[in-house]
Length: 443
Ligand code: S3P
Image (tube, rainbow, N blue to C red; front, side):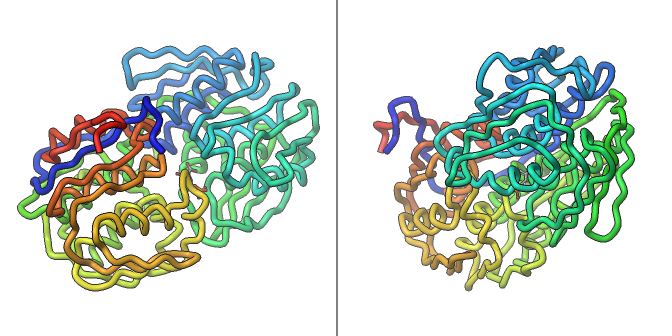
């Protein structure tokens, strides 16, 4: 059910995406640049910081622990580093809202502090699995607990001496890897993490920018405790996960030709491009360069005829956040698209397998849910009422489906789009999507 403050999206059918645009800063990099800036010595400047609710939740948590962060402009932030041991006791429970990245990475960082802390979040975050971080942190010597059900709140008793561990991740998760690398900075000796498959490596790259040596070989990443971080300047690229909605929109809206400037194309994030190209997309990646240790490029997309594919399983962990959007491309494609090996989709901001298949049913697209994925048969996208399950990526994905729809699509409960993509409606409208906000009464 929508609450009275929630916003629906009303998307008119058709439209063409055009022009050159910039999506907001990368969410994962913004969180990490802020966290590392906080525990560094000196002033760190973050250019292109994402002003989304998730990253602002991380920022508020640090403010509650005595950190001074100033905005020179909306996306230009200066962090006064407190050093590894300069945080102060938080004024109360730290509420990280909807943000899994904030809570899981902070758990690692706070496990090494001298003071107690407690982490909580909104109704969605309260349901998400936390034992994946509390268990290995306990192995490192932390005094940390979550509920019997493995959920928030997380409670940490400070003043524990952490020691390095050698740990194989039981789930392919960059949040978990990053949590342990952050705790590893506070641990005695070396912390080595073995990943079952590569996940986004922004923490490793950023630690390098802050002067911390990381050892990486095959799928193992090691960090030594006791080092110092040197403040620096980080220029955050546009978020490829946000760009993905426009990339898919341009693929499926006939006559589109859009360029997204300065988007991060880190190989651990850019699989969406490979998957769409395999489906027949017309995408060119231009002006590749390195920016604060991250590969960045301009991405040009022209509409094309897409066809369904079996999504290669090895690309799943590095395209996980993009599946709501990719599945919209599958709905507009000819034939069947099959996604397997994506059980993690069930424990995101919503159960994304359930949310996508339910949404497809509402707009006349045949979709079958598997425990670890789904199958979508391309067809005629009809109008209808879709529930976003208060999940930002479900809301934006179905908004783009309007470009290939035959009638109006209304998407319920889209307020959480602000967690990752402030200004989505404005940018989408400028690019050519006919989208309007409505209140909960607009059905
Ligand atoms: C993120 C890692 C991914 C991703 C999330 C952001 C990060 O989650 O889905 O949106 O910034 O580390 P998992 O680590 O749970 O796979």
